[in-house]
Length: 521
Image: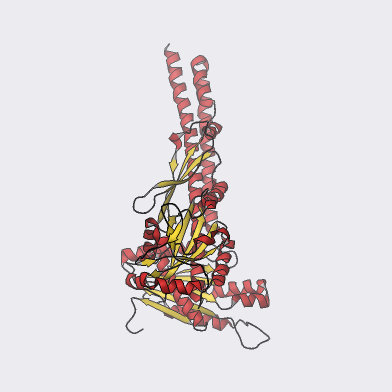
């Protein structure tokens, strides 16, 4: 009897040990799939935000915005990001200027008026408000033409999001109101990006300088499906949860593998949150029974029953079990080590741009965010500037892509050599631009001027047939002495503003912004 009890006891312990080992392996696989999926989703959303900033820069450069110009620019963006279903130009209209505004727009759109939905769901003329946010242009045009003039501020939640984006000067995301039947089957989000007159630098300036909003309708269902198909196992039930703004929360999307089978709640895993445009999203993954069963073996049960019925071979079974556990653990350790090494290699590759080998834009953005946090903590200044190669597209058209890439690498090497401190960061910023981050620097303009001269010293001929024209660069930079009210997007936005000034000033020059402004500037 004692021998049987000992055999049962050790068989039970061994079976549970193997069972737990398999459970841990399943938990690790689920965590990996869910984290990879949420990171991939975050990258897609941030790409969409970057494209909206690019469109805003084009709108700022345009002297006169009309329907044709907006449609052309918006379609270029939508062709690069297929999950953007529609784009709108929404203008800001003070209440006292409404009649004048409607009269002016009717010259272009004869039936235009500012409208809202009534209780029956019909579009009716809006009464007096302190200010309006009417849709002036929208693409694709088609059936949506009837919502031109719709006042987004007629919805309290939409108005709240618009004003938050306006006052802060940053993009804000908001669940879309259903303006058309074709959007009812999708989970859509509107992204608001404010456009201002001039270059307002404070909250007070922004409140009086608003021109309008670029609005993009994102199909989250498509983005979700695309990222999940690439990263997560199809047998995992997923829920995308929006933490919202000011405590709001709700499930945006979910995937259900098989309703006829219960789910394994014990393996449920919630990812680290991603943050974008005022939203906080979390992805929760719960494996289906099929997923768990396919990864659980019959060995735990088999070992237990063999131990009960075959006490005489207890020692042998225990030996086999121990070796089996060791082999499984060894395989897990080996796979974990290989995955860690692969991730390290992938991280090194992902930081580099293929043409120049420099750090890529994602790595630069993360570095700027980290440096802003450090400057907040240490109360030190920070500087950064953007370098754009002048007329690079014309150079490529003249000399070919191979020569263009060669010149790009040469200029990149010369610029990188100008950085002397190990803390300074040189990175690729765009198709023909680079970014330089200077931590703990009260004035980065001297280094920017050196970079400007270094490219001139290369004397790369722009057109050998035309004479002395050489390849030059334009530089825009910003120095922030007190970063307590700054974040990474705002720092980069000021650098882009300075770069636009340099380009508009005739290129081949450096423009700098000091915040707060120096008295000598």
